[in-house]
Length: 439
Image (cartoon, rainbow, N blue to C red; front, side, top):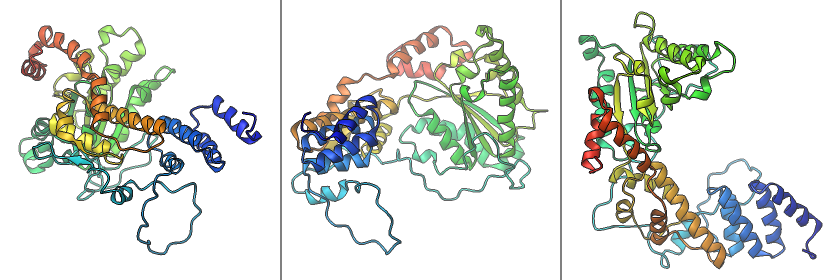
């Protein structure tokens, strides 16, 4: 532009070279706003929000550029040492809603039936958590390790929205024996265990694993194939051994093996000797020495394709229990939608209607639905120059655009359930498919 300053021209060229640089784009938008070029500033802020949907600085800049009313004054906080401000204060949506309460509807509306609880919130109670003990009860977790070990978290099964059948099975088959040491001693039950979670992608298997660790008051280690594989011979096997050694020092500890089909693929189908050796080492570590070394180590694994997992990993004493994790049910979908809409500007959202429109959606699908609806409202606000709330039209429109990602998984699982259900391994999957009339 001929009337543009050299600084703005330079920044425009820099943004063209690095379009994903959100701080640079916001600085450019601030300069445009200072020169009174509000429409261009709104456009830059909208693009920034596409790259970083939750960026508070971008939100605040867009609000200022559109001339939206500033939030009312908040009560003065207790005196504190002054700190230098880094950019504009984030826009207070709650205060803005109170200010325009007579002009816009409520965030949520009832659909004729009582709404579910907000059990899907990922904020735990944070109470009653004991410090991790070593297997000998000394309370010293051992030396620091190269492997990341999360301290006992506050996430509990109560924080998982809905999915009551999954919780009941976890309680009966896995958690109850671990919580009752007297009964465990009476019946000779070892303080160890293995559980394989399987089901469509994006349905919360990792979150459930963290909730199990929280229920047990145990440390948590999340392991994937990239953490283990190494280009040098023998190093991958050593990594597997070091992971379990760390877990034993930090016991009680939950070791979560993500994407087990990649880490423990069937050796008969694996042509790379390194991967076969990794599976062999994993089997050795799961067994422990004389069956006692893994006391206090709970192994949880997750996979989308359990039929590709080496059968030796699933024999008794290893990952001998399986649990099917299905797409969230109605109460779970409501809790997930509430969680992903909690900080977005919405009005008159009928969660009951939205839950019915998202049958078979995974948790990841629901998060993407909320992102898509927010993007629609944002772009509309940028085009019209007037900030508006996310409404049911945006959300239902997004639901119509998206297809449940679990559909392709069930298409493959159906063949396994029909022709490869040896020993009743997938009876729970067969029962679900018959219930949904997909078998």
